[in-house]
Image (cartoon, rainbow, N blue to C red):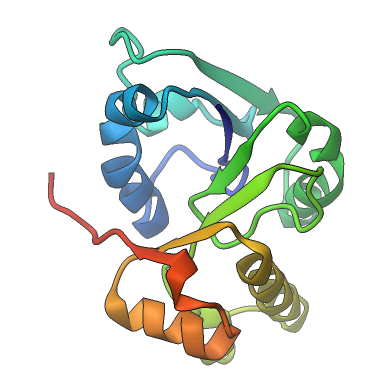
Length: 183
């Protein structure tokens, strides 16, 4: 099994809520994930950041086949969205799954590729004036479409799960809760 982890939304060498959650849940358990799923993992990221440093990955551990693919010239939100939604299609043909620690993956996927997303909350659907009008429209539409077609959705609490089910109209059986943890 081959998994592409979409880290294009991380654009700086500091972690905030979503990044800390991803590090604590996914990266700290990477060797177990690779072993239990018997998979190869490729991290897709902007060339402007050092992903293994940002997420404190100990690449000296024998954790299976891990690759890093960097994408150049992702200098702003528009270039990231364009890359995510249009340029990744041919790259994705080599993978069985694409996972994003954020709520958006490419909307159009090659046949057989399954999307897994993490939705922490539904701020674009609740918070007014948090995003520009265009960004809010994109986030709402993309979150809704990605949730509808996701193979699985990971979230952080029962409250978030209830919101995802009621606001996005997603079947609750595809939503999994993985609570924030203290390491």
